[in-house]
Image 1: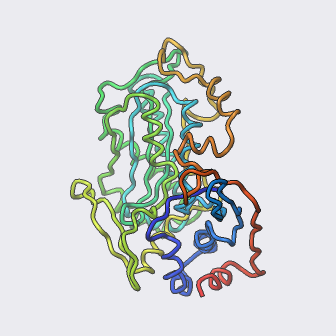
Image 2: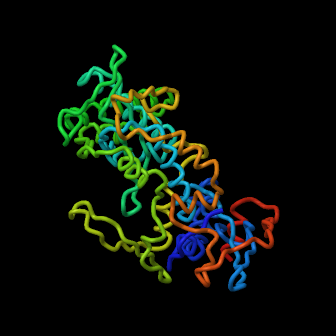
Length: 394
């Protein structure tokens, strides 16, 4: 169960106001319908919760359970904080580089045809590119933590990977080695872009031939081949903790947060978006309610799809035996961290990681809340998801 700061306008309000017409259009998949249904129910009496009373002022409060759907804007804050803490234990205390692998929008047609296939190829092409450049330029195995995003700032379809790559690798002779010729880049970015382009197109053509689907995508593949592909490599960042918190901005982010929604009127939704063609200036974007939800639904991932992956020396199967001489001062005291966490309650850990105190009374700001009654989940009547969602939208 999680709490959050209320926004004036929320995604759930938009689903309730415009979801019915989008549902009637027949464009939504069962998975997309399920996500919209979960967002509507999140932190409502439908999911149950707790009745609490303040020991000081005696005011009764109701705290409802979250839906825990990874596409829900209310359910990501605590997950992000817990993930950051976990990653802190297994990250080399060296400089890291932020590399972004992007794919031309001409290939979006293939993404819409088979999202899982497309994204698997995107991860594979990026990992193989980084692997080959590590050996070619530095003679060692490197690694990365990669996070998949599928959206642009205006909710358009824009699949890309954010990768954090350590300025270190493991050589064939079994020794740690610092990598990175300059602070401003890890690899020559033009060579990186060309190599990634080749690996991605080669892989996707091979898979399409296996599925006898090549003929339907020849035109978009040819257009993508003619375009110049772009891989961004940002200057190195010092300090493992800084790097992890930086990556944490991307891990559990969804297509849009409630805080970005500026206004909802009877026909349109207005939200703030960065315009990267104009020095990343924040500007309002207005879409019809149905179009807003249609774009949001484009970014619903298949069930069980893993959006955060590790490669090379950061892969889960790799045992990092960190040399104390290699990372002298910044290696965290993992044993002490584990001991401290074992003594924490769930609310204490959330307070430490997020600064939000679940036990403080929101009315008097001083008293402590105690649970006096558990509120059961309201069981929905039997029926399929579209009919249940229709009932919610009446």
